[in-house]
Image (tube, rainbow, N blue to C red; front, side, top):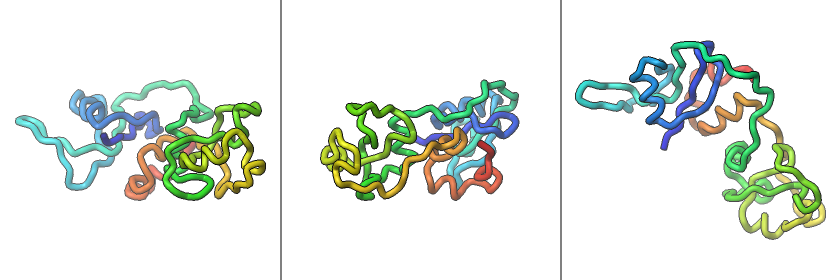
Length: 168
């Protein structure tokens, strides 16, 4: 199912929602379509709506300040573009750089995407102990980067320039 980026009335990114939820918000006049998939439309007897990629809420919603993006396994896979941090193949699991058995935490800086083979080979050792090298260091994405990453890399390139330069 397609994900749609939701912007506040001030163009601040808030979250991603399903295509169905985005269309409902537009139909209820709670949001307007800022960016749509080219050539795709949702049609019914009395409705003709472009398939939204980015919607903006009509009214400003006050949200608590988010300094950090919340950590999640899905977020780590999206951040690393589903590529194994050890070999570069397709990643399906999340590996702890400092294993939880040795006190490692579930955090952005301690987890990387990994293929099942490398995750099993590394086991409960650090990469140095296992003789493995990280291809890229883990990093903590900003909340805005986490939302844009959830939409996909190819989508980011197709979005307007003003959206790619959103503040953190």
